[in-house]
Structure formats: C-alpha cells, structure tokens
Image (cartoon, rainbow, N blue to C red; front, side):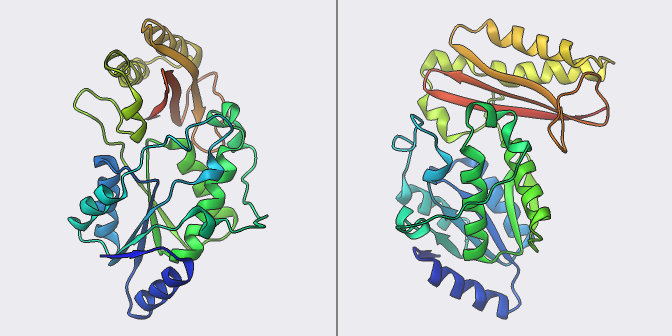
Length: 281
C-alpha cells in the first residue's frame, strides 16, 4: 500500500494502472474510518483492480462555525485498517495541495443542493462537488463508491457526473449500521451516553414510516408527522428537517408514488446526524 500526498504523483500512478489494463476504483473519505467506510472499500475491490482510498478533510464543505477543526482524525489508524484490506493507494493530500494560494474555481450543482441539508448548510454541497471533481481529476477512476447514508450527496454527485459527462460509474453502497440501528458516522464520536441512546430513534422512526407506507399510507404529511413525533419525544434531539421527497429532484411530495426518499437531519448536542430510507411505492 502506497501513501501519496501530491496530485501529480497520484495522476502518474493512475496513468500506469490504466495503461496496464486495471479498472481504477476510488473511495473518497474524510478519514477516521469505521466499518461503513470499509464496506465501501470491499465493494470497490469487487468491481475494480486498482483501489485508491482518499483521506482528506475538505475545508470547503464546512460552513462558518462548523466542526472542521474538531472533525476527528487518526491517519495512522486509518492506514492500519486499509492495509488489512489490501488496497493500492491512500491518497492523502494536504489542504494547500488541493487548494493552493489564489484558488478560485468551484463546481456547483444548482437546485437540488438548496434543499434538505442545503437549507441549513448553504455552501456545503459546493464544497463537496468541487472536491469530488478534483479527486476525479487526480485519481482518474473508472468508478467511485459512495454510501447511501449520504443520500442527498449521492443524488448530487450522480447529477454532476451526468451533467458534466464524466466517464465514471457511481456505485452506491448500503448504509452500515450499529447493532441498534444507528447509522455509522465519524460524528457519532461526539455523542454523550444519553445522546447516543436517544439517537437510535432516527432509524426506529424511519422503519416505522416505511412500515406505514407498506400498509397503504400515501399521505406524506402523516409520514412526516409520525417521524417528527417520535424524534421529539427524545429530550436531547433537535430536528433540523424531516422530508419526504422524490429521488430525482428532491421535490417534496404530497401523495406518495414511485421511488420515495424519507430523509432527516437531527442534532444531538454537538452532533448533527443524518439518515434516510428509500421506499418503492
């Protein structure tokens, strides 16, 4: 396993891998890896022969007052975990390597980035799409793997790839959960004991909502009310949003039909947690 810190070296290695006929797979991460990340790596290994995992805490996707400086980092531990999976490259550029002095260029997907998480984090997705574009240019992958937990991010990245004609397959991996259902996240580290216990209501409420739909409920407002009521019963929870939207343009739905995304974001103390479920109606 090779650790690469510069874009030029990463591009050279990618060129060599491609010239040898390898499919290049990219797993973008911000590090502090957990089983959710490792599941993305295993999926990438099934679909590509040369695997790159990027570890980069991207400053441009954090807004003012957010946790960029505090975001958990443990590069040595991350590398030990990845060594055991037999990947080829850890791409770990510095912030100055990715955004050198005088940097002026950003990539922005309109409309769908202004909904859901984009309401309370208006600059977040511009940072995401910019860094992912730069990672694509550095790693030159045939495919990139993202997790379903970040459902809006997946939809935004797919739209960007389609609109900008990237010749890259976007592979979406299922959300990996703790035994009690909480979606794995690096920010779970922020939770106190009580907040951690209360946070299980996110998955519980989504499962209840899914069950209600499966028994015939089609009124989106009733689904939202159910989820909000369950979460509101937890004293440490502060709801950012609960939404029922389509999976193409993230438009709110009144009556459910087709593929439906039930998505939520809730704060527990310092942690802002997201989760979702997709239901075919």
